[in-house]
Each structure stands twice: as structure tokens, then as C-alpha cells.
Image (cartoon, rainbow, N blue to C red):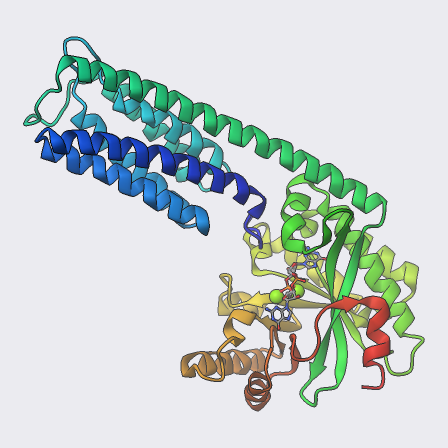
Length: 435
Ligand code: C2E
Ligand code: MG
Ligand code: MG
């Protein structure tokens, strides 16, 4: 199931892996490149310099790893190794050895892309291992290349074998640490749940006149020794480990307790509270009953509670999801589609879903005041939502100019740092009641 957050807990190890491979490629490419260049083997020198360039790309990527660049880099390394293997012809004394670098590349891809699609998860690593076997058994080579002198060829063979094995060991060591890190984070999160270190902050939502009409509950982890952690740092592990079900119920309990407190307050009794729901929570067969139980326990009007889902929720069993949404909607709970525009919603889907609100993602709001294209796009989204009888909330409003534009377009509600940052619940009512 598509997840909202990329698993950034892997980044430190990916960066280490990139630095490690980068240094190995640069050293290897430069040493051999210089040797070939000074011995008038220009074609080989050029090939080895491409290996050096791949190393530089690894080091650059280590400064800002992105999910998309990694497969591209893996393919570059594969192609560079295939070319180097074709250039590295076996002699009477030594067999080919450049193909051994396909082992660390295949192993790294196997571990790194284990949550990707079938091509990266299976086909790419298998290509690496098939290449390894092919070059070990095939005499195929660039026919015009000169052979290296026997002593240099033996030295090269030893160097390639040692480097390739050291790289493979390094890759395995890096990923063994990753498993340890995840297990530790998972147990810390389970302890945090039991010790009540997780709490919800509230961020105000306002109407077109700037009056507070409710809030969104945003989870924070006050982790001893680490300070306040944002959901991006721990939700991926909570989702992978299944803890998200218990965490989600705890957030709902805190939200319903909050609504119950607001119902006692004259200025706050009409405020709505939005709660984020992970796609995995909705796959649970007990979700509807559990939500009903909590709403009942706090005896709050269900129409003050709004559940936010992202478009990825519809990637699994659409019919079952819609049935759960409709069941809770019949109790009065409303549904909001979060981060609208970043997923894959179609107009047909929007028409069929029991939605009450669209939250326009903040990536569309940034720059709206100066970007005519963005302005027109949001205007159309708001128009379509109106036709479908769905209200709109603009997320991430940071400036007065953005607020003015969105107001003029007929957006229903607004949320963002311009109106207030997420804050602890105890401060919220004091700050916004009678606003
Ligand atoms: P979201 O639901 O889209 O929440 C909005 C995020 O945008 C929040 O980040 C909020 O602090 C941030 N934000 C609000 N206004 C502005 C602004 O004007 N400028 C900028 N740059 N950012 C703004 P936060 O609190 O880090 O939450 C990130 C995401 O974590 C949320 O995105 C939501 O998907 C998820 N999340 C938060 N709480 C929960 C939870 O209880 N359960 C689940 N499953 N996910 C949660
Ligand atoms: Mg949200
Ligand atoms: Mg959002």
C-alpha cells in the first residue's frame, strides 16, 4: 500500500552506503584510469573515468538522497560494471574480475529496494547476479583492446576481488545496523505509547472571515533525550510494525476528550476537530466499531469529529473502504481527503466517495499569489468541489496574500502558519476562544 511518508529512517544508512560506494568507485576509477591513460590504452582509460564519475554521483547524492535518484544511480553502476567487465578480458594466467563488482551492487539493490515494485525488488538484483555468472563463463570482450602485461593483470585481479568483497561486506554491515535501528525505534515507540509520551497538538482552522472554526489534531512524540519528534520520523515505523492501530485509537481518544471539553465552552462548542487516519487503520475489520465505541465513551456529537484520509487509502479494497466510510458517516462523522492533488484521484472517484471536504495540499498553495497557472488550477479545484457539494480547506497558508487569493476564489476554510502553528491542546482554547 502506498504510504504518505517515504521511509526516511533508512536515509542515514543509504547515505553511508553512497559515501562508501562513492569513495570505492573514485579510487578504483582514478587509479586504473591514470594507469591506462599513461600506458596509451585510451579506450580503457575513458571507461575507467566513467566509473570515477559514477563515484562522484554517489557522493553528490549522499548529500541529498532522494527516493527517485537511487534506482537511476543503481543502473549507472550496473552499466559501468558491465562495460568494465567487457573491457576486462581473461588472460592465460588470470580470469576476469571486474564482474565481481556485480555482487555488492546486486546485494545492495536486493536490500535497498525490498519495498519497491517487482522490477527493482527482484528483476534488477537478478540481472546483477545473472551478469556475474555470464561474465564468469563467457569469453565475450571488446575485441580491439590490448591485453595487460601478466603481472599487472594479476595485481588487478587481486585488487578487484578484494575491493568487491570489502564492498559486499560493507553493504551487509550497513543493513544489519539498519535492522537494529528499526527494532530499537519500534520498542521505543511501543514504550512511548504505554508511558503516554505521544500527544496531539492542535492547529487552528479558520473560516473566510478569519474566525476559528476548529482544528486539526497533529501527533507529536515527546521522546526522552530526543525532544519533540514529528510524525514523519515515527509514523513509517508505526505503520510497518502495526503499532499504528493502537496509536490511531489513542489519537482518537485524545481528540474525543478534547471535543468533550470544548462542548462545555460557549465559544468552542461548535468547533470541529479533524483527526488523521492512516490507510492501514482503515484496513482493520474492527475500525468502525472501535471509532463508535470511543465516540460513545466521551458522549460527543459525532458531527464535530472529522476523519482525514489520503488518496492512497483507495489503492487497496475500495469497496470495503467506502462501506466503512459510509457506516461512520451515517453516525454523523465527516470525511476529509487530505493532501488533495498529490495522489491519483480521478473525478469519477471524487464523485463516488462519501467525502465532505477536500484539503488542497500546501504544495499548490505555495506561490499561488504569483503563479497564474497554480492560481487557475486551484480556482478550478474549488469550482469542481462546489459542484460535487464538497467543502474545501487550503493547507499551508503562510501569508496574507495567499489568504486573500483563496478567499476570492471561494475556498471554505483555511489552515496554515499564517493563522497559527500547531500547539499543545492546553494553550489552544485560551488563545482562540472568543477570537
Ligand atoms: P497533514 O495531515 O497534511 O498535516 C499538515 C502538516 O503541515 C502538519 O505537519 C503541519 O504542521 C504542517 N503545516 C501546517 N501549516 C503549515 C504551513 O503553513 N507551512 C508549512 N510548511 N507546514 C504547515 P506535521 O504536524 O509534521 O504532520 C505531518 C503529517 O503527519 C500530517 O500531514 C499527517 O499526514 C501525519 N500525521 C499527523 N498526525 C497524525 C496522526 O495522528 N495519525 C496519522 N496516521 N498521521 C498523522
Ligand atoms: Mg491532515
Ligand atoms: Mg495535508
